[in-house]
Length: 153
Image 1 (cartoon, one colour):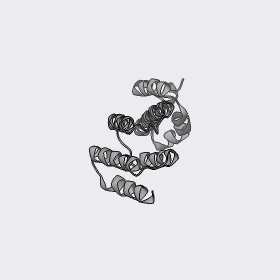
Image 2: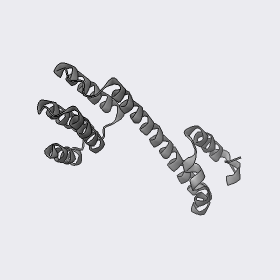
Image 3: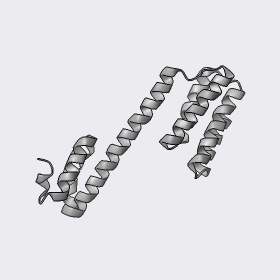
Image 4: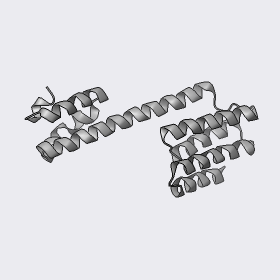
């Protein structure tokens, strides 16, 4: 088992292309099935490998579909439909959080350019806690605001 974790770490670091990481990630999962690991062990190792080898959303969905097909062909459904739903929900939440953080970073950068770094420090916490819709509204106001207060009214 330890060898799989080490291999996952090595592959995650050495593979630059996402498609290559996807292929290695699947091969590692396939090895777990072939070696006959217990369900609990597979799930724990799956979580570790998933954490180490990150993929873009499209490739992650393809990877999960390949895992589902592997499970069906081996008649070994280690990842239940509830777990699949949880994995997909977690991916969605992660994407939303990433988008919010990106929008906040862009807004902070634009504010720094327009009003100076000192002004940004006063509003940083408020911006970082705002939801995506609020950030979008504030960003649009930032374009035409003459003073910083006009953005947050």
